Amino acid sequence: MHIHCQKTSGGSLFLARTFSTLIALLPVLSFSASAQNAAYPVQPIRLLVGFPAGGAGDGLARILGEHLAGNMGQPVVVDNRVGAGGKIAAELLSQAAPNGYTLMLTSAAPIIVAPALGQKLNFSPSTLSPVAKLTDSMVVLLVNPSLKIDSVRDLIAMAKAKPGSLSYASPGIGTVPHLSGELMQSMAQIKMVHVPYKGTSAIMPAQISGEIMLSLVPLGAAMTQIRAKRLKPIGVTGQSRSVTLPEVATFSESGLNGFDVNMWYGMFAPGKTPTAIIEKLNLQILKTLQIPSVRERLLNMALEPSGSAPEQLGALVLAEEKLWAKVVKDAKLKID
Image (tube, rainbow, N blue to C red; front, side):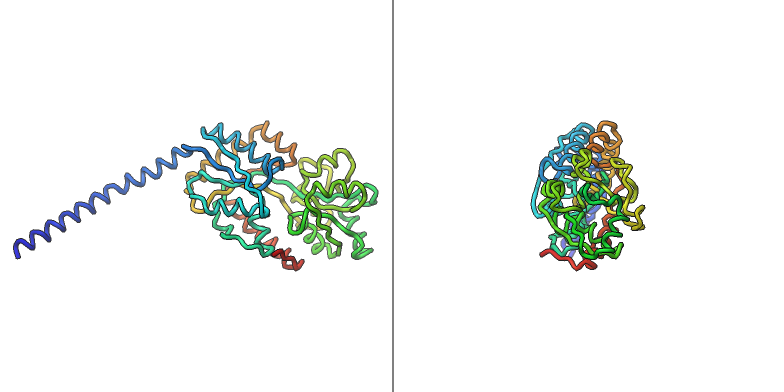
């Protein structure tokens, strides 16, 4: 019995000492994790972009990546993962380790509009970690100059006088410009015929030639034709007027009170990315967006630098989920 008790006592002493050692190590382990976050980044950062090279989203990613690399001391590698309307890039982000070394630049289309249209994602957009809203942009309503319409009010009046007689083009079914047209019809209580094209580049020559008289397209993609006066802008969808086209009234100013469609771009990280990393990225992004040369380059692309706290981007995502779900439901739209 005495020997048995000694073994038990020795075993208990060993366990006690082991437990004490682990408790003592906890602050060290915690400090080690904090130190890693403080040292971030110590390796290249991969920036996923679901848009092809040459477009506004890709251009924004490369401008940001260039400056973030300089400020953070590590390369930022833009990785264009084109396909499925940006969903491929979003799903890759959702599967990445939450360590700040994989980020994504995106618009609302793959993470908000696609689910509203019934397209399935392998993750919930609400599980992503918002980093910062980057830029604002708008949808612009264009008319062929031969159509004697000078404002959104004129368009609404014409549509009410001749229901179903007007057609409008968009870059495709389920795009934000298309849904902007559906929202406009719902708010104005008018009916127009939607004509989807394969991208804005296909709309421009068709509208200039008179094949289609009205279109809703991203502002940046239309600026060349607007500046050449081949097409006339009669309304923009933002809450306030565009810096790029300050002379053009908003839909809201033209009688559709509260109409606000923002083709923003934002930066996201995988869910559960440490707060310290998110805050460091947010700070560097906001600094970059304040650089005069960066602002000038973005405004030339009709992208208005905005920036936001991570929480503000998260709130925007939640608000737009509700907005587009309602628009899709009211218009009875679905894409399988």
